[in-house]
Image (cartoon, rainbow, N blue to C red):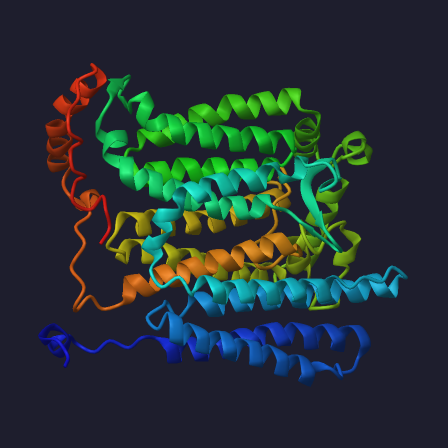
Length: 495
């Protein structure tokens, strides 16, 4: 028998039919790229387009039905945007494969990317089996240790591999995998769980120095140890892109948890000397900074690790103009790693500024939906996790596009869902699954479940009074007295 609250609650559409319509549009975008590539390269329609279309439609239908069953109230825009980006990336990688084949250097990157996409979709469905995102709080320590373990795997003899001067890969049979991609997901879970349990201590306790609120060392210490170990390992591996990503995730999650802008200033203060040291003492960073500052200088263009790749990518973007040369009609294959690090330049050459802005708008919609999910969630852990995952995607896109357009130095990150790279693609499908699960919790009508009261939503004065009430007990405990542990404030433990 339905409850009175359920009987009086207004009916709200779940959005699953909207998701189905948007999935059709996303599939048309991806398949259109395949068709235009073949038409412009060979002058005829691809014979396998019907088989390809049937396979993509079948996969999209299965995933849509799975979301309908496991997350019926999820945001209807998240999955179609990811499918559109993944499809456009596959189409561009296939287009580049045809160019390499024409010059006598055949590749099957598109087939491998399709296999990684299938694995990512399978993991997406498995993650959705976790029906309540708050269960992840019980695994925060495992997430911390798992993230650190993934970081050190490339150092294991016989398992790790060094490619292009960076030791960030491991070899598993015929496949190579970059384990640091999963670290960003695991540490996002750990940061969100740790900060939601300690945010009042970090935001309100401690001393005020030069206008900045500094927490007690025992509250911030564990978080700094995990973050510092991650950054040191990534610097040793010469994976500066992932180092920047984890640093940004750490600072932004801390800022959102404490609502203190001073943490942004502290983060900038930590980043500036580290960036100066890397740019002046690490050779591979010096090369990238020099290539960024003096890209057009002939001696910088021709030197090992110089600016030739950056310059050719910029010329590709310039030749694309406003509307582009047409899909399959340009020469993006002249840029090294055009299917991975410089896929933005390849898209800009053939789709023009208009098409590239449309692709960037898809990312903007994806991030906006993730942040909107964070605003709707009723528990602090879910809010911080949604913000962390959304910011991870946003920062990754900014760093990649900024490097290709010479706004900032190149870092080696890949564009989410779009660029070639199995580890990155799989990790981003896991991130998408978590955002879908979080959006399902945010949009689900709360008709029978109790409303969660989160201390982050309370006024600062009330939060400070709760913290001050616990201070005498904490002081007695520090002095060696045996006192009972104070109960956690309402909202620290999720229902």
